[in-house]
Image (cartoon, rainbow, N blue to C red; front, side, top):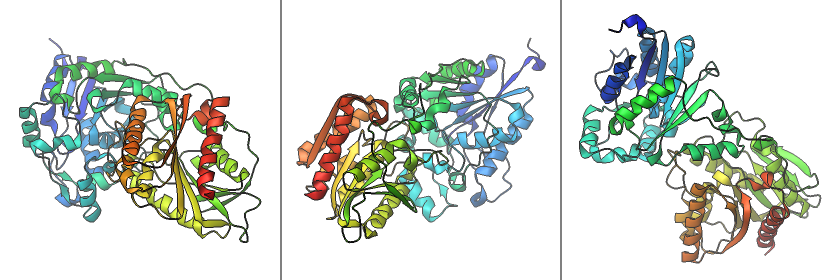
Amino acid sequence: MRNDHDITTAFILASGPFTGGLLWDRVGEKLREAGTEVHAATLTGTGGEGPPAEKDEGEVDLETHIADLVRLIDGAAAPEVVLVGHDYAIHPVLGAAQERVERVARIVYLDCGLPQDGDLPLALVPDTDVHALLRERPDAAVPAPAPGEWRKWGDTTGLSGADLERLSVLAAPQPGRTLTQPLRLTGALSGVPTSGILCTEAGLSIRLVQQMVTSGMPQFQALADPHVGFFELVTGHWPMLSRPDELAATLLRAAAGDGHRLSPATGRPFQGRPFLLDVPEAARERVGRVDLHLPDAATPEDPRPAILFVHGGPLPRDLVPAPRDWPLYVGYARLAASEGVVGAVVAHGLHAPSDYPAAAVDVAEALELLRADPRVDADRIALWCFSGGGLLLADLLAAPAPWLRCVAASYPVLAPLAGWIGVDPRFAPTAMLPKASRMPIVLTRVGQENPEIAATVTAFLTAAADCGAALELVDVPDAGHGFDVHDPTEETRAAVRRALAAVIGHLHG
């Protein structure tokens, strides 16, 4: 018979919004059978009764839930604690872990995001009605979904009608302040091993995450740390109901340090790689969020057309160097200046999928700043988006301004990708195409694109053909995402020059 002193690992299980500890019954049973200690968290104000509330309902916030989990860590008898955060709960899990880092053996990210310091849990909420509610009333309680509404919160593959009914029966309204209070991280967790469990029916897989790392983009490089292991479950967003035995077995493997390791990107980081063309320097001025790269000929007496370059994302807030200082965007801006056009780069705030509205405001303000500069011809402006910045085309296609002579996009993302939760539905460039009239569009498509991104481009091109959009396609068959710093070949150099010539042609046309 096993003695309690033989138990070395305690699992603390915390689930997404509305739900509580009863969701983990089967998983907890299997983990205990394997000889571990288990605590299934019911956070204050969520499913079940939860711990005694020390605050009024409207005052329960993220810090309250962090304190709930700290109490569970302190109450665990086993010397090592594995914290499992599903969906929203990864936020209080991280907050609690950094307060008791000496007790935490591992953090498991279960089908959730990768929140950073300052992120709001609301950023990972896919239901835009909730965003609207909490903008007006940050302390409102978010109603728990009815059985037919859970698909708004995640993929429901594997859940029966009875499972969905049980989810609703066990759920309680989510205190609004738990979603609108920012997570504060101190860096104390940098050495703690982590595991990621991906539920593939939601669209994210180890293969896709590896592609993100291989791209060299800085926000993904920590995922290739040897202390990070990945697992896949072929199910939807609630594996504790749809695959409880498999989830329990996976958690045991994670606690043991198993899991697929990702290969790190080779060579220079993306943000340090040189632009594929040698271009002359140009006079550079920084005005707020906008950097202006000016041709010698640009004067108030001879204002020049301008191109606003919009970097991709989402990107971390504290990224060094910032995107407007990357050789990629500086290179494009200087290339424009070398052709007698003002090249401008905007530093916009796309740090999470829910930040598209804020980033759109930054871009709109940058366009106005650019048009107000006396060295710029206010009636001849183009906008050029890259990668995840492609969704920002939606507003400009929906209501084309007469002074906007062209929009361009290089290897764009034109619909939210798997795991991009909380994107405002207005950022749908494909749906906006019929409103774009004859706005010229120059799109650079790469043949070696990530399949998920490529599908968004294919859908956009099909819609453009259906509505007769004025689209010019620059195809680069042998190039991949970010080719303008990855693949300096004659083909890719020619593609960049061809795309720029098309944009400038529309500016002068």
